[in-house]
Structures are given as C-alpha cells and as structure tokens.
Image 1: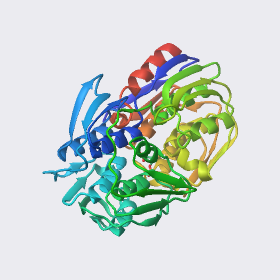
Image 2: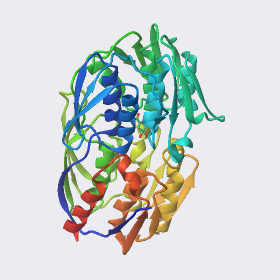
Image 3: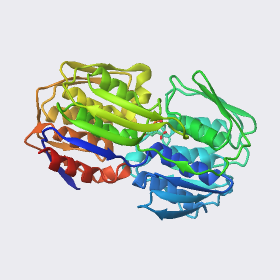
Length: 433
Ligand code: S3P
C-alpha cells in the first residue's frame, strides 16, 4: 500500500489545468461506440476508471485508436450499436459509472454478459439499475437483496419503454435507463427527486439524439442512433475542487484553473465556497457541448455554512473536500440529505468523520450527513484512504493545512480519477514552503 506524506504550505499562487471530466469521458466512449462512424475525443481522461469502460467496449469489438498526448486524444470507431458478445467477463474495476452505464447499454444487446468489479464495487448496490432494466425486459442477476456484482446481464434486441420514478437523484440510474431506452420502442421517461448531472442529455443532444427535459423528468425516444461527431471533454470540476479549496482556505493564495467544465448541474461547490466567504470569479464559454471556462480563486478566512437538499446532487463527489473546507472555517458546518455518500467508493460519511477526528476536528456523524466544527489549525496525523480516491485527495489537501506531517495510507486509488494529482501537489508544496 503506497503512502503519501504531506506537509503544511504557506501562501501560494498557481495556474493549472485539470485532466478531463470522468463522467463525460465515460459517456463520450459509450455514445461514440453506439454511433454510426468515427468520433475523435480530445481531453479524454485516461484514468483507470475510464480505461475500464474503454477495455469493456473493446472486448465487445469496438476499435479505439490512441492518437497521442498520453491517451487523452483518441478515436472511437462507432459500430452502430452492433456489439459482439465479449469472450470474458467485463472488468469494471473500481468504477460504478462503468458498471451501471454498461448495464444499460448491455440491456439492449441480445446476449449474456458478466460484469465484475473490485472489492469496493462488489459492495455497492446495483439493484438501483437492475430494477428499471428488468422492467424494460432485460434480465439482471446479481448477488443478494442489493443485487451486488458480479452481475450477469441478458439483454434483448428490443426493450419495452418505461416511465420510471427514481427513488434517488442519480445520473448513473438515469443514464443506464436512457442507454437502454435507445433500444425501446417508444418514449421512455425518468423522473428524479431533484435533477442530477445532465451530461448524458447534453451529449445525446449534441449527437443528434432527441431527448427533452420537463421539470424533473427526462424523456427519450427509442430507435435513434447517435451521429458520429468529435467530442471535446472539459477538465473535471471534481478534480479542480481539491485545488479550489486549497486556495480558498489559504489567506493570500491565488489560483487560476482553465478549461474546466462549468456545467450548472456540477458546480454546487462554487456556490458553497462563495457562501463560505471565498472570492471566486468564473468565465464561461457556452459554445460547445458542455459549458467550460476558467475559475479564479483568491483565498481568505472561511465561515461555516449549511449544505443540503437540491444542492446535494450538484456537489455529491465534492463533499469530502468540502468537509475539509468546513474543518478550516469559523463555526459549525452542517451537511445533510447526503445519505448517498454511504454507498460511494467507501462510506464517505464515516471515512471523512474518522479522518477529520484524527486531525483534531470535532465531528458529529448522522445517517445522512455530519456537523463539523472548524478549528484554528489541523493536526498532522495518519489517515486512511479506505481505497477511495476522493478521500485520499481530500486528506492530502487537509495535510497542506496541518501542523506537522500528515500521512495518507493507500493513495494508489488516486489513479482511478486523477493521474498527475500527486505531481501537482508536490509542485504546490515546493512553491508554498
Ligand atoms: C456519476 C454520477 C454520480 C457521481 C459519480 C459519477 C456519473 O453518481 O457520484 O461519481 O458519471 O453519472 P450517482 O449517479 O450514483 O449519484
């Protein structure tokens, strides 16, 4: 297990870019594979999670060419959705997005496929996608009540459209259904308690697949095939989030991040940081498939806030780093309505609470969130990533604000979403000493 040792930094000034958006990279691969010709993808995230999607599609006969720049520029040859039955189980690794979205794609393929994952993925609930996909006519067999992986999916050439009321605001559920809906005869609708990230809807529109949103409901018509077009993936706001908090909480720091995704369904972190007192300026370019632009952050003293309700899906992956911001803010921050965090790559509520306590921060844990009381200064400690990339990176940033040394145990998992994070962190530490 690899450890990362982090020391405190004083003020810093940095300009950086972050790797491609993970959610959009998965979708770019799947929708271009379904399309009617070659699609070039630039800014692709060549991380372990997206590689799991890529190798799964390759195992189904999709040709992917690497055109250069460390795998971030690729060409996918769309096979019009005529996939071959893979010879072996598809290995989704640690990636929930791969497993859930591929389940939707496989629901419309007339053969049986097995999907496997690592220990963490095998603990995560797959009944949330199995249930609607079975209603559409696919067979999804998993383990136990929560239908956990390994999964066996038996798809069908033609599926039945459904009107589905999702119990959770989850883009993975919505996207799995929308992928299957391409093979359903008629209109399929998904209604969510609150809107989740809309990358699938945007990308399908961009690839000329008609879908509409009415309130909390998205509808799509079957029998459509994505048109082959080139796709530009913006930088991942969820990766930028670590540097945004690092700069916002450090008096005198200045940070500029360019070419980052600024989709309104993903930027809850910016509103929260502004409420906490950070100075943040955005410049957005809306001309592409996804809004993207630059963010400037000027650091200062943060104050506590309350995070909950409809805001949660817009920042769900940023809660570990927002919890670190709360630990550095004046007052008590409340995070609620975030029970989904319990079924991510780790139980992120208990992982954050345990690690913050080790760093001397008072935390009260609830079923759906936590209360965090900010401290003058964090204490360097040994913390555990629990194999979860976002916990590892959040606590690496916490280490920049801690007296003494912070040791993060198990940082290999960072490769699932942010290759290059440790290099960037080391540069920042060298600069800010
Ligand atoms: C994702 C959706 C979110 C998010 C995950 C990626 C996606 O999960 O937490 O990291 O790409 O659709 P849920 O849909 O389960 O909320």
